[in-house]
Image 1 (cartoon, rainbow, N blue to C red):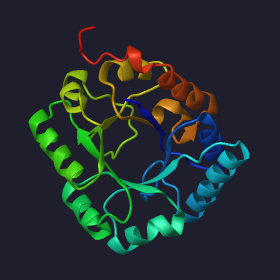
Image 2 (cartoon, one colour):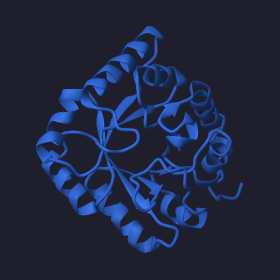
Image 3 (tube, rainbow, N blue to C red):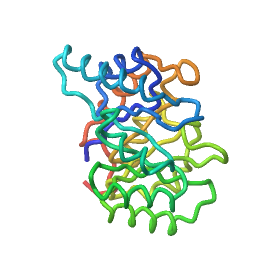
Image 4 (cartoon, rainbow, N blue to C red):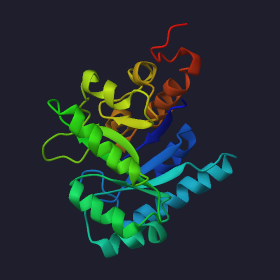
Length: 233
């Protein structure tokens, strides 16, 4: 399985341009007012343009641009893909409200559902929820759930919880990833996607171009033949 890379929580056009050159498969803009990495619509528009222009000038395919949203006005959500130009929406937060958003969108835009996992989570319950979202056509990723936060905390999900949720499934992993540990996570769990925010920042909300490049390079360094799938050779 090829592991895709998503760099999330970009905050400005410089971040956006540097991320486009880092070689990631997807880039995330947080569109949730009041959060630490929020970007308002006018800035989000400029960042989308910077990403696509930078990729084009470099002769690269433009990465998938993902708008990260939490429960908000359905009327606002309906306008985001066209108004800002994102390719997909990533839903975080309360599940019941996220279901309302998914039902309203009705497959009109690709969805990623981030499911929060606490240190004492019931794996069977999390697995059941993941399957429900996959049946809706959403890609699923798991992030560490921290009280009062919607993500980007740098907290890691215990591996013993992640392994049964990710093994053999096309699911992503977030939380506490950084250039120095992501290759080990990819080798161990073979996730469909790794999603990073705080692990490639110089300070909260300010991305580091070198860390972004190093993160992508670390994931790419893991050859498919080196991934431990638990199959005897």
